[in-house]
Structure formats: structure tokens, C-alpha cells
Length: 74
Image (cartoon, rainbow, N blue to C red; front, top):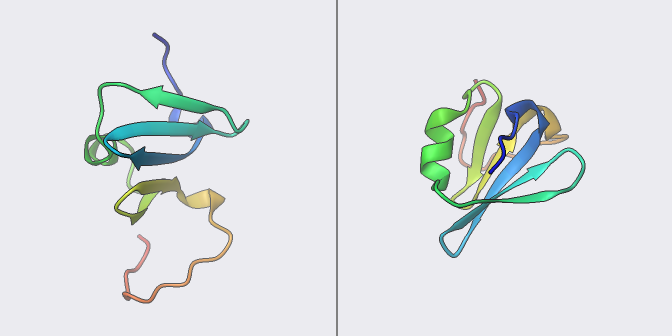
């Protein structure tokens, strides 16, 4: 077991009930005890943004955002 610093995480991705964290070095980390919803509730909402049902991204990694649903970033 090891801990991940959220500032090193670029995005979280859920796939078939399994959640992975991808860090700034491109490494993929399996998260065994969390759902994406639980992670979303734990991370700082000023730093991370839910872009789809399966992805939660660090806002400063977004280069361009095209919003068709009129959601505003805080």
C-alpha cells in the first residue's frame, strides 16, 4: 500500500467498477477501495472536475473545454 499526492494525479478513470489514478509521469495506479464518486467527494473541487461518468480530471491539465451542457467551472 502507498499514498498518492493529489497534486501528482492528472486524472481518475473508472472502468467496469475499477478506478485508476493516472499520475504526471503517465503511471497508472489501481485504487482498490474507492469509487469515482467517493474520490470526487474527497478531492478539492477547485482542483478536479468531473468531465464524464467515468473521468475526473485535474483542472490545470485541461487545455481547452468545449461545454455543450452550459456547465461552468468554479
